[in-house]
Every structure is written in C-alpha cells, then in structure tokens.
Amino acid sequence: MGITVNLDVMMAKRKISSGELAERIGITPANLSVLKTNKAKAIRFSTLEAICRELGCQPGDILEYAADDPP
Image (cartoon, rainbow, N blue to C red):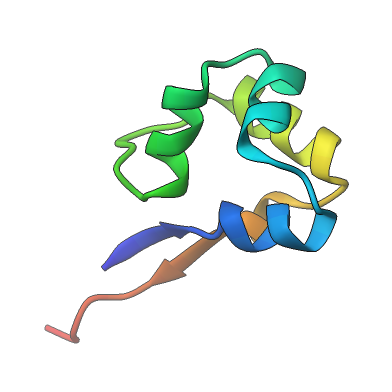
C-alpha cells in the first residue's frame, strides 16, 4: 500500500478547488491531479510546504502511511 495522499479530503474541508490550489502553489492543475489520484512517485518538499501553507495543515494531514501485509 505505502503512502496515500489524502489531498482531496483536506481540500474539501477547506473548500478550495483544484484549480485555485494549483494556482496558489504554482503548479499545473495536471500535476496537482497526479498528486490527488495517488499516481505521483515523489513530491518536492517545496510543493508539500506550499500545499500545507495554503491549506493551513500539517504534512501528516495529507500524507498517510499504510503498511503492506506483514512479511
């Protein structure tokens, strides 16, 4: 399972659209969509910082770790 991005949940709580958030943090709506749909392989700390600043949250509010089945 690994890391899950719960960005859509926090965006709904803050009542902000994808387009508006993308504009505020300086990335394309397409790149924000990649994050929201858990298709991203990585995220820059600067992008994560900008998301947290705009949504008034902590990284742990949007990133969640779920372990795979035990070995």
